[in-house]
Length: 53
Length: 371
Length: 131
Image 1 (cartoon, each protein chain N blue to C red):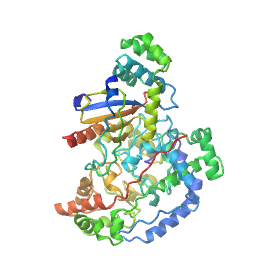
Image 2 (tube, helix red, strand yellow):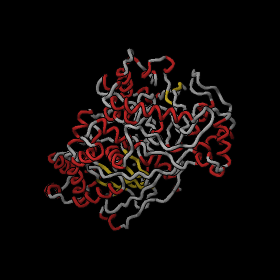
Image 3 (cartoon, rainbow over the protein chains, first blue to last red):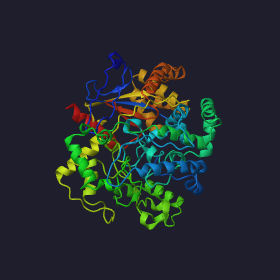
Image 4 (cartoon, rainbow over the protein chains, first blue to last red):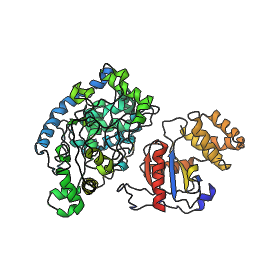
C-alpha cells in the first residue's frame, strides 16, 4: 500500500458521465495512501468505507 | 418508509404518535381536499407548493433538526440504519432495490418508495395506513424488520445528547419526545419536493419543455394509454387503491425470512390466517374490506425515471417493463385494467414522456453534522 | 472480485462508528498488519470473524497470519494509525457518508449491504462504459 501513496490522487471518473439511468450523481473520491487491491489501470475502481464491527 | 410492524399489537394500530397525528390529520385532510379539488381524472396539473399542516409549521430550525434525525443511526436498534439507509439522497430517496433494505438478519417485504413529493400524499405507505408524514415517521423506527428500535428507548437515546436536547428546546420549547421527533422528520421531508419539472413548464405553456416524442407520449398518457385515469392531477395520483395483481416475486416467496415478515405484519393486523398467508394482501390488512385484497396505493409518477424498480414489491425493473405490464392489462385475474394495444412507437413515446417530463431539478442534500 | 481480476481494483477506507466499542481498534489492527505487508489477510479475517474483535482476538489473528506479533501489538496499542483513520473519517464526513458500508463504484454511491448481483450490475455497466 506504500506504492499507492506515491500516485497523485487518481481521481475517479467525474463530471456528468450520464448513464442510461439518467443523472445519477458521481462523487470524486481520492485514493490517497489507502490499501489497494488490483491494478492501477483498472477501468473500475471501488472505494469502500467500512466498519469492521 | 416501508411497511412496518410495531413492537406490540397495539403499537401497529395506534402508535403513540397517533394523538398528535389526529390533530394534524384534520389539517392535512383539508389540505388534501383542496389539493384534490383542483384535479380531475384524465388531466395533469402543475405542482403547487406542498401543504403544511397547521399543527406543524415549517421552521428552518425544525427542518435542520429533522434532517439530523433522518441521517442519524441512533434511530435504529443496533446503530446500522437510519431513515437514509432506505431513502438515499443520491438515489432519489429510494434504495434502488426491489425489496428495501432491512434490519440485519431480517428481510423487508416491500419496495422503498421515494420521499420526494411525499409531502403531497394524502396517505403514506403502499397500503396507505398512515395519514400524515408525522404519523408515518415512527413506524419504520419501531418496525422489527426495519430500524427495530423501541420508541421509549429512542426517546432516552435522544435525551442523552446535549445538542439534541438544546435543539428540541429551541424548536419546540420542550424536551425530545417521539411525537416531536416525528414532527421534525416530517418537516425535513416536506422540503423534498420536485421543482421545475419539464411537465410543469410544459403545462405552464412552454411547448419546448418537452421533446416532440415526449409530447406524443403525453398524448398517450392522457389518451389511449389511460394512465391519467388514475395518475392525474398535480401529483399524478388519484390517492386511491387498486388491485392490479402484480405478481409475487417467486424468489421472495421462497425466503423464510420474508415469510416471517409477512406473517408478523398480518398478525399485528389481526388477520386470523396469518400463519398460512402466502402473498401480500396489501390494503386489505388495513381495511379488512374484500375489495382491497392485494390493492395498493396509486403512487405519484413524479421522479419516476429515478425510482426504479417499480411496484410495491419492485417486481418491474424498468419503465419498459411497467409499460408492458399495463399494455397487457395488468396481472392475472385483475379487474382494474384492460389491455391497451399500444404500438411499439406508442410505447416508446410513452416511455420518453415518463423518463423526460417528470424529474424535477436535482435536490442537493448535504448530510448534516450529526451530534 | 475474482471474476473481474485485472479490470477492477478495490480501495479500503475506514469509517469506524464511534458508538461501537471495537471498530476503531479493528481498523488499527488492519492497518498495523498492513505495515507488515498483510493488510488484506487481516482485512479478510476481521470481516469473517466480526464481531469477535476484542484485543485478545486481534492478537490471535495476527499470529494466525504469521505477523511479528510483538511489533503488531506495539502498533495496535500505540494507535500508530490513528492519523490515517482520522483522515479517512474526515474524508467520509466530507463526502456525506452516514452509514457503513458505503461503496463508491467509479464514484457511484452504494449505501449499505447489497446482494452481490446489485454490485455486479453496476460493475458491468461501468466496464461497458469504459470499452
